[in-house]
Length: 191
Image (cartoon, rainbow, N blue to C red; front, top):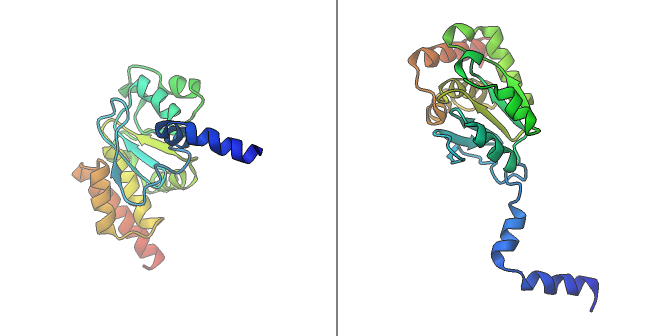
């Protein structure tokens, strides 16, 4: 029997569940989670989790959830929380698992200057994906996603706001701030 035929015979004798599992071993990095539309997902104990295009928007993961994220093939964790918001050192956990860790703390609207929003847009453009971006409830995450969707991905402000709210944005102060920034940038660019 030729090597090609013997491999086919072995594959045919394996259970279907095994064959399907082989293809999904690293679902996040293989494009399995590269949803075109914003989709709700679940991973460990994370209470709010959505994904779109290699980005995952999350409320605070537990320490154990980061190990699950690593197992799923995540490359980067972006933390938008202040150090004082966490009772443990997230950087140590994430880097100890071999993932990239980016800490871009946002305490609220006052931190979202024009310059800072520009930096966060650049971060989203350049971050190694799949990437999980999180804060406490995904509220701050949704605000950043809104800006990126409108200014960098050409989505209408109304559609982007609906997505951002599904991703976790709920603060009227944050909504007002990012909408003003987007309007200002669109006026500047002339569109």
